[in-house]
Length: 112
Image (cartoon, rainbow, N blue to C red; front, top):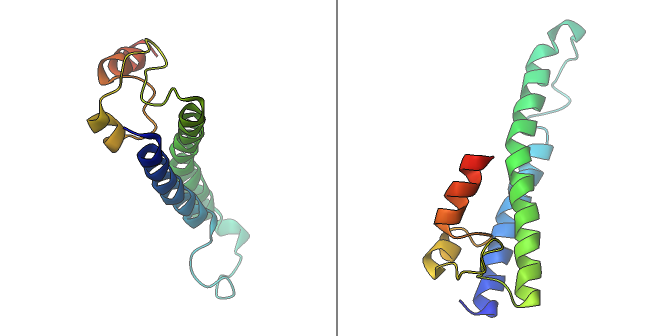
């Protein structure tokens, strides 16, 4: 995969993830219509925890995209950070921020 295509794929993923994160940060509904009943804060706490649970993997993906963008700049994009082996274009199209071949990623996740 050439660097222009890689940059385009990474930019699209960055935009998607940043949009999803922004959506999590925005309160839903009409704030003025919300009445503050201090005895009923549990639903808000649950929603905050859910949002944080959704945001964490998005932030991790965003960090991986930043690392991939740096690899494009460095000329190492498309090479495994583990072995230096070429990551197939099909994998990079599916996961533009992929850092390892599929086999290496499976081993990596199995040891974590």
